[in-house]
Image (cartoon, rainbow, N blue to C red; front, side, top):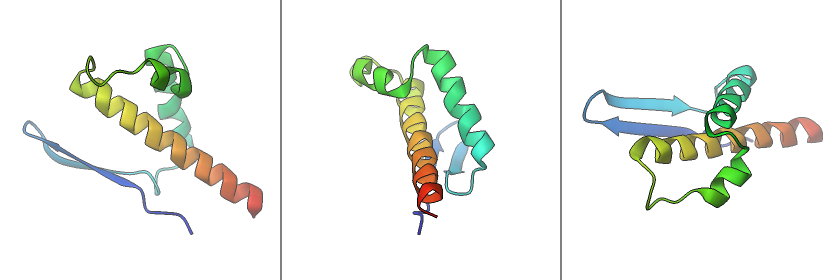
Length: 84
């Protein structure tokens, strides 16, 4: 059984936004991961090694968390499909 992964984002500008990773189509997950890899010029594992919360802005912190969750969801789906 897969966990229902959701992130709720609170913003004074736009209110509340909810991202549901568990219901996101595979193609969307892969597209968004590829966008982060292109934007930051490296895969997630290398990016995490260079990431510093002390020097990151709010958007970069959000991107890092979103990217990690997308990658976890992709990997969990791959593991489930290999055991099925």
